Image 1 (cartoon, rainbow, N blue to C red):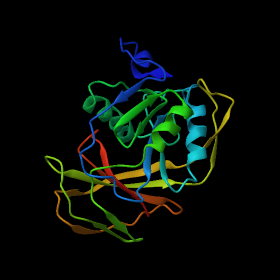
Image 2: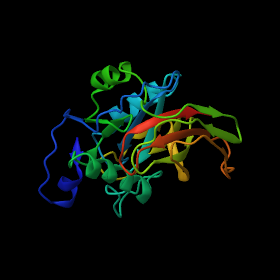
Image 3: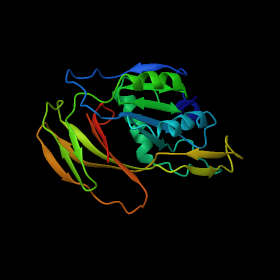
Image 4: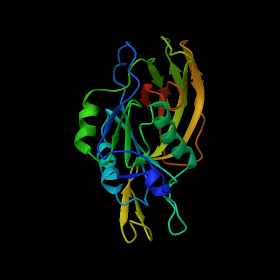
Length: 238
């Protein structure tokens, strides 16, 4: 497990396998049937990341899990740049740390339902957290290929962001030519390719026409999230 500070040469504390409990869930019950959101922040340039990516690959076929692999940029170098990394995804990981009392930024790092982090691959701990269930405190979601309906409910102070996620469900084999994983071919699944904020939920029911993607073969998911780095309140696969 590699911390961002270790990469940058700064002083930064993060313990492998550590669990940080984030913002407590509201008292509202979890909407039925919503998948557990498992976000992995990883990089092709980090030798500790392949076991965690393999775990995401195994989770990808579970109906009760939304497994998302985010490539971060801070491992990129002149020798090797992650094929799928984006500064937007790096910022998302930093937002989680900032919102949760400096929980830390590392690779590999999971965030479960935007509330709990697991540093390092640690598939057993990830499985324990998945067993606790999906997002809570948010509205019911109804989806089709082109339309999202968000139900009414009690919104957090300041409301919540509505995120559209587009990810590649295929197994993509990437030949790494340099860096810590140089010479290896790594399998990636559920690679996030697009992340866009498409609305704001203030507790009132609403309907949103979903924008089209220009990239064929991507799957779509929706997240209702209580601000940058906040807990995920509702989730849906489309």
